[in-house]
Amino acid sequence: MEKSIFSFLAVCLLVQLAHGYCGSDCFKYVAAGVCTSLGLWYGYRFLIRPLDIQRKLADVGYEQHITQKQWVSKDKLHLIRSMMRLRKKGTLPPVYPNGWFALLDSDQVIVNQVKYVTALGENFAVFRASNGDVNILNAYCPHLGANMAIGGVVKGNCLQCPFHGWTFDGTSGKCVRIPNDCSNGVSSKAVSVRRWECCEANGFVFVWYHAENEAPSWRPARDIEAAGRGWTYRGRSEHYVNAHIQDIPENGADVAHLPALHGHMALGGQYAAQADRSLWRWLGVHEWTAAWRADGTRGRHVSTLNLQHGLVVFGKFVVFKMDVEAQQFERDVVIWNHKSYIEKPLASKQESTLLAHRKWYKQFYSANSIQFSNRKKTMDW
Image 1 (cartoon, rainbow, N blue to C red):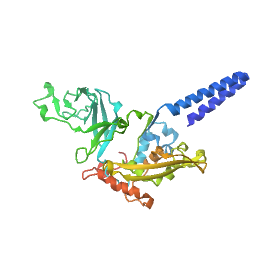
Image 2: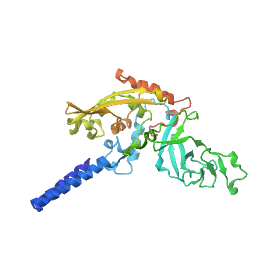
Image 3: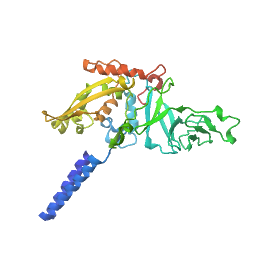
């Protein structure tokens, strides 16, 4: 927003200079050219060019707690982690629910390439075989512990360790080759590395995680592929969030927070307090009607949030009334980055859907799900 304001002021200055040094006819052409160019540039930027929003942990919800000198230094992540250690945790659910987790964008792993990903307390070697299929193995070689995702070589459908050349099949995890000079009598048939169940859907690489090592009971929906050619890429929004993973889907069931947090226009700022002071509040506010439910028709793992939205202009006229998906997203991130988990909230009747969501979400935890007390003592995941 600040860049746009400075750009506008610069254009105004150029127009003023042109008016002072050019004749009236020349000035008209200059002013028309500047306005046309500016209109075309903004039209491309906001209507044609795909949106690309990427926010790191330090970008949302911490800037007001750090001085400008600290903010430009390399110590800002250290300062944020210090704040995280002081944050009240609350009685948290288990750390990782059972289910599918997106590790990478599909286009981040090209054919014959391996990527190293740390997630869910595990270390993954994600590689795309010569035939285009994605496989995921434990990153560390069982021979001498080399990280096969760092310098490993994809051989057909297998991954070769960069340290001694031991090679593992991507579909089974079994060792298929041990070089003669380092086998020491070890049979490759007796060696294997964990192979993780994985799939691709909607442009993402997913891994299946289950505390009881159960096989997948469902698959990620391929919504984009099923929709056919009607879809057009319009951009992405990527955020690093310091919160328990349950807080994010639970936000959809907490319909009571919509007027307080998302009532003001998104242009007002990341914080509700900013939006309340913004001049945009005089133009209009958002009105929301929402309903959450567990959708048993598409499987026990699916829930549905129906939203109706209307923009009330000047406190009187309702425009853009439609069914939507909520996208004023960064204000939620600010809350998630600092909230404590309340196991038994003081929920009103309107917030009964939040309690229903928590009851429904318990199905994704099981007897051996890792508890937060066994993981770490701070909120630094």
